[in-house]
Amino acid sequence: MKRYTAMAATGAVALASAGALIVPAVASGSATTHTAKFTAVLQKQAQFSKRSFGETDKNLSHGKIVGFDVINGRVNPNTNRPHGWVAVSTRGGMMFGTLRFTNGPVTRGSITGGTGRFSGATGTIYAKSLNSSGTRTAVVVTYRN
Image: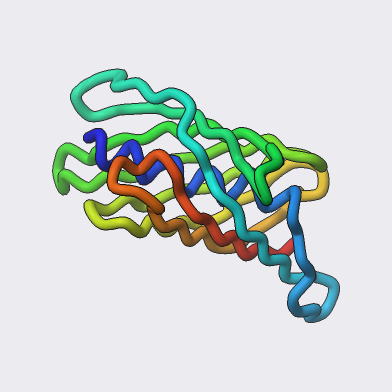
């Protein structure tokens, strides 16, 4: 479970950083695509039960704090596959998403909405662990709103 929890940090960081370093990429109609890259650093984690866990991360860009996130994860008892939810607080509002954890270094997810400048946001999360303990994660978030 600790491996899944470490990967959770990855997805969360991506979301939190998205608000701080948004770079417009492509404009189509009234929605604009934004891409952000950052590093998530694990702060605390807890095992709530045999199949559920939580964690919080500090989100950094160029060494500066750009946000914080909280992740709640569960392991499906029928498939034994982990999944989770993330809420990220950053400049301009909050972003929400879902995460699909793996035993490998990569976590993928979806942005499902938000508040403030992230209201109505949809997109993707790609996160890759930067160390074997999973305490530092490189994150790329792409979203539209």
